[in-house]
Image (cartoon, rainbow, N blue to C red; front, side):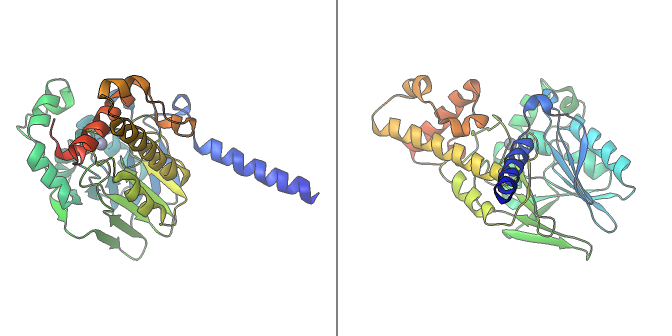
Length: 313
Ligand SMILES: [Zn+2]
């Protein structure tokens, strides 16, 4: 009986692990699911380029994680209204990419304050409005706003850590270093053991490395892993457990290692793009199309001795 029990328990643990790692086909974009009381996850519709959103209920107001693209912002706003009558007071931009910040003006118009780590605004100063103007050519929701530039976060967080605590809940904003982008922000709910990661952790082959520090990415995730976390809410893809952080870190580590070995052996980037195969253990993060670009980014970072995000286009 003891043996059987152990077996059943192990079986259950294994199944839970699998269940958390839902495939894309099981995902349901645009739906809102509850993660903990007062904490909702809204899965973005990837076909529309949307990121995920998280809605956190405080005593008198709501916090929304990521502004999304304008059309995603409207959808998330409608869901927030459906979920709660409390107003959205803060929208936290996890990083400077358009699918996370271009909806900012819609939120501020609705009365919210957009906030982010100060490097987010700095990156926008450096890289915008070029990307906004480029995006407006293909995205009606961006063009429709008739702006010459995106709206930067209204409030900067200057320290590496900041918390909102109204007695009902504590919400920590943490900058753990440069991974996906220079300004990456995590949102951590210590009591609920929820970690919102932005694109520093994604669940699936959705990694964009053009503004990244690939070599430092695993270090940032090791810092995230030190937190007591049960639920990981990624910037793209469905939620998972803490194994998502480890898997994403391992993917970046394997990518960097494979490209570094090729560089040390004097190989060209085209050779590496044709030959690098990452271990099966990280296959959830690999797609052939995205891997080619990621190999190029890692190659440039290693050969030029600077984070990819510092190298320009
Ligand atoms: Zn991003």
